[in-house]
Image 1 (cartoon, protein in one colour):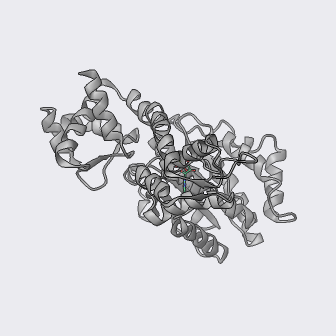
Image 2 (cartoon, rainbow, N blue to C red; image 1 turned 90 degrees about the horizontal axis):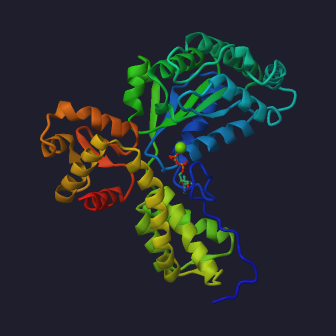
Length: 390
Ligand SMILES: Nc1ncnc2c1ncn2[C@@H]1O[C@H](COP(=O)(O)OP(=O)(O)O)[C@@H](O)[C@H]1O
Ligand SMILES: [Mg+2]
C-alpha cells in the first residue's frame, strides 16, 4: 500500500449528462452520426437519427459528443434539451451565442450565425417564441424553419451542414413535436440539415402519433454496456490517473452495476473515495468497493429510486406494487394482463396507469405486451416500500 503524497482527483462522473472520461461502447452510434455528416456534405439527404434508451444509459452524453464532433468539423450543431414550456427560440439563441466563436473563420455559415446574433440575443427573429409544450406552436416554427434554412444554405456553400440536436424529445407536447419533426423533414429534403435526437424507449410510438413521417427516422438503441465495455468504463479513467483496480474489486463493481452506466460511475466513484480515505491511491481493492456499496446504495435510494417512487400517484404505486409482486413469482418481465388480474381490473381500465408510468420513465415495454422496471434494482426497492407500508 502506497502512502498518498497527493489526493488524486476522482475521475468518475456519476451525474446526468456528465461526460465519462472513457466513452465506451458507443462506436456504432457515433459512426452513424459520422455517416450523417459525410452523406450531407456530399449532397445526399439522410434520415433523422434518434437515439432511444432508458434514463441513465448515456443518451445525453452521446448527443453532446455528436454535437461536439460536428462543431469541430465546422458545422452549426446546437444541442437543446427540451422540457415543457421551454422557448425553443430563446434556447437556440443561447446556443448560437455559445457557437459563435467555435465556427470556422471566414465561412459563410459563420457570417450568418453572427448576423443572427447581431439582431439581438440570437434568434429573436423568431418573434413570439416557439414554445414547446404550449400547444400552439405553428407560426413560430415557420420562423424557426426559415432561420435554419438560411443557415443551412450558407453551410451548403461552405461544404458544411447544420444539425439540430434535441434531447428529451418525449418530453414535449404532441403538437410541438409534430411541428419540430415537420420542420426537420422539410429542411432535410433540400439542404444539408440533420435532425438528431434522443428520448426514452416509447419515443418511436409517440413520434408516430405526432407525425406521419416516421418511416424516415432511424431509431438507434442505446443500451446498457456489455461486461467488457463496463470493465473498460471503470478501468480506463483510473489508468489515466495511474491507478489500478484489483480484479475482484472490478468484478464486484461490474456485477453491482449490471451494465447500467450511471451505476458504474457511481460505484466506481464511491470506491475511489473509499480508497482515498484509506490512503490507498495506487490500487483499488475489494475492501474499497465493499465500503463504497452502502454509500452508493443510499444515494440511489434517496436519489433515483426515491424520486421515481415519490413522483408516482397513489394509483400508480398500487400498480408498481402489483407488478413487483408478480415479478417475484415470474421474473423481471411480466405481462400487463397479469398485473391487471392481480389488481382485479380490466386491462383497459389499468392501461392509462401503465402508460403514465411509461411516460415517467419508471417502467417500459422491452417487448410487446411485456413490462419491466427501467432501473436495475428498482423491483427490490418497490418491494421494500410495500412492506414498509404494510
Ligand atoms: N458510454 C458510457 N460509458 C461510461 N459511462 C457512461 C457512458 N455514457 C454515459 N455514462 C455515464 O452514465 C450516466 C448517465 O449518462 P446520461 O447521458 O445522463 O444518460 P441519459 O441521458 O441516457 O439519461 C452519467 O453518469 C455518465 O457519465
Ligand atoms: Mg439525458
